[in-house]
Amino acid sequence: MSEGPAATAGRNRSADRFDAVVIGAGAAGLHCAAVAGQRGLRVLLLDHAEKFAEKVRISGGGRCNFTNRDAGPANFLSANPDFCRSALARYTPADFIALVKSHGIGFHEKHKGQLFCDESSEQIIQMLVSECNAGKVVRRQPCAVQAVRATGDGFELDTDGGVVRSRQLVIATGGLSIPKIGASDFGYRLAKQFGHKLVETRPALVPLTFDAASWAPFVPLAGVSLEVAIETGQGKQRGRFVEDLLFTHRGLSGPAVLQISSFWRPGDALRIDLGAGADLLERLREAKAVSRRQLGNELATWLPQRLASAWLETHGLPAERPMPELRDRDLERLAQALSRWTITPNGTEGYRKAEVTLGGIDTRELDSRTMASKRQPGLFFIGEVVDVTGWLGGYNFQWAWASAVACANGLSAA
Image (cartoon, rainbow, N blue to C red; front, side):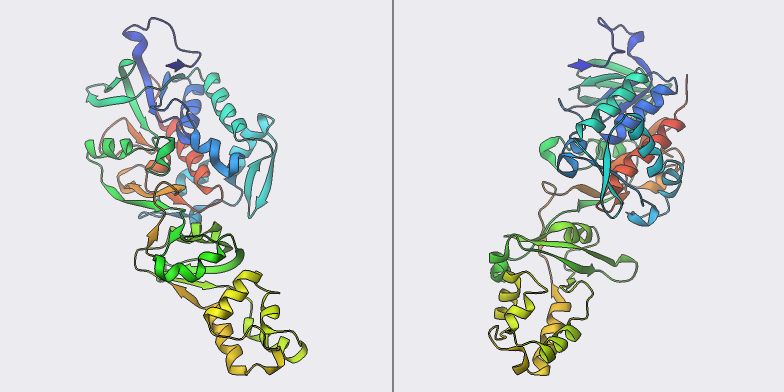
């Protein structure tokens, strides 16, 4: 079991008393512990895994999409959508960017406000650890928690390292996504123990799958990618994005599908515009008037070649026919099919491929200013474990940072 620099050998009874214990050494837990420690609180950070911050480590292909410049309440889903406003307003992307700059970490904007490290996600992890060290945070991992009890003056925890006592307890254990790196339902079980309600959880930012028989014509397109407009749902539950879509052997993935998966419900259809908003009928009419190319070649100037060929074959249109010989009604049928492709997934790739967990601890039972439980004094929940889920592109990390700071500043000193 490894420990931070504030730990001492031969711990005694008094050494195992803390102002706050943070369970979960991911993005939110590390940041919360660091800020609280630097406020002068005696903080213990626990994690059951041997390696901590694994989601940070694998994020962004190993370069960590650590925030989004444009993150705001509109980029988050929750049964209580206004809850995230307070924390996000008080700790903004600019605040975290300033911290990153103070550690000399180079970064760049890749796409739509998404910020990535120039080098490695390890830089963000080391930054968070350095901040914890500056706050004299005691770190213990791997160190699982077997039981938590409320006492007259706080909490008592049975851990692999012995009994720990604390006036305040912060749960930052994340969601169910990517179990191979240590995801568990610990936070949800503890919330229920103290009387909290849960909003139903499900995989989010996850590839979607289709019935094998109906998907068979598209299996040869695995690896094909293109920008599309994609939507699902109705009214307030409607989601719409313009992003890249990726065909796979089992279904659809890529940023467009990961985004829309947070809005998709079983039985709902996806509505996909393969022209990404372009007027395809007008393009086809113009091509008919000026081009002598075959339909398949013309369509391949707008779509990937494999997709254009498969689409025409599936829809019974002659790829080899010259554009001037095509009937207007055939062009209209083709344009409509391309811009209004409607398909219904049969499921998702599940938590093993999901980047985050949608749902979680009902935020109507938390204080939006401090993340404190309204049911149990001294208990706090932050990060992915609560029912706040961001879009793809750095938003979920920004929620981790913002909720962590709101909590850290809400913890009381001795």
